[in-house]
Structures are given as structure tokens and as C-alpha cells.
Image: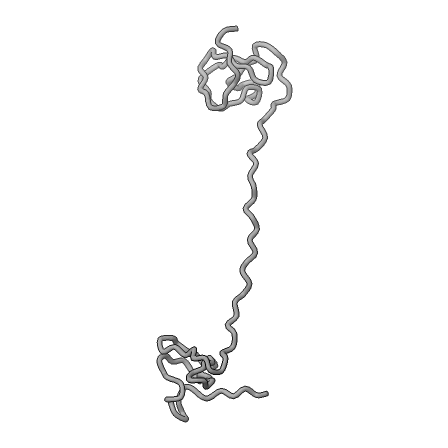
Length: 134
């Protein structure tokens, strides 16, 4: 048979085009593209003209590799301040029980505030010297 080609999923076929798929020869009854011969049933576009179709052979589904499992990063903890460090920041907002070190002295905040320098707020001020119970 002339004009016979192996079926190609990306090709367009018109009425009367002949293809071979899995050793079976088919003819198209109308325009089609991407419809695999032998899978469209009795009323489908492709009719057998020679050979015996076996069970429909579908291409295997595309294999996909699952994304790698990425462990979440470990939680970060802020180490306690070391005496002598100066981690107080005038631009930071502090809340009750925040602890900072300023000029080598550890202080604890009494309430929400910003820009109050430790050691300058007096006896009734926001910062109190912090002494750990040992």
C-alpha cells in the first residue's frame, strides 16, 4: 500500500489516510490528530483495514520524579547574652521580660517601649537590672 505511514501522535490525518500501529493497518474516516488507532472503539475515527488489533496499547504515563524532600531548617534560638556584650538597640521595640546587655550589665524590660536606654530610666523606669537566681 502506498501512502502508508507509522502512526504519529503529533501528525494530522484526513479522511482516507492510512497508518500502521502495532502491526495493524488503519484508515481514517475523518480529520484527526492525537487519537491513537485501536483506542477509539467501534465509532471512532480509525477503521481496521488489515491485521488483528490486540488489546489497546497505551503509552506508559510520563514518569515524573517527585520533588526532593527537604527537611525544614532547625528552629533558631537566640543564645543568652554574654556579660560584656552590648546587644541593646535603640531602634528596636522591646516588650515585657526582654533581656539585654548594655555596657556589661544585664537588664530586663518591664513593659513595651522603644529607644529607652538601659541604666538611664531610674528606679521607676522600664529597665531593671537583671540578676539571675542561682
